[in-house]
Length: 114
Image 1: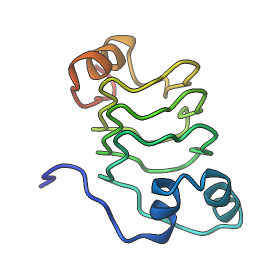
Image 2 (image 1 turned 30 degrees about the vertical axis):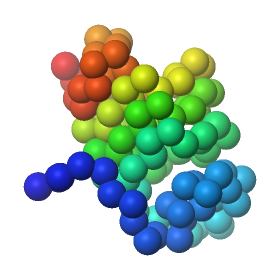
Image 3 (image 1 turned 90 degrees about the vertical axis):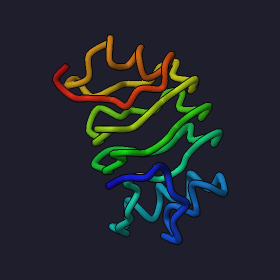
């Protein structure tokens, strides 16, 4: 059972927390694996993140800067984007605009196919 977002010791996750987006992307392109499920991204600047193929289910993105990120091939099931900056974000087609709006405004968790 998920009890909220966590700050993991995964080195790739810690790069994102430290704002090292380009370094994260470089390691990701080189095939380095990471566990980003249920992670705490609240208030972080993640612009420029290569999110393709990542499992970010259950993550908290409250007040995070997600502008311009392509999440179209990212698992965001159960994530929350409450009050995040989402201008130019490309969400997975399985997420309805109502789901995105409810998560953005009310903090609900994103549900696919609703």
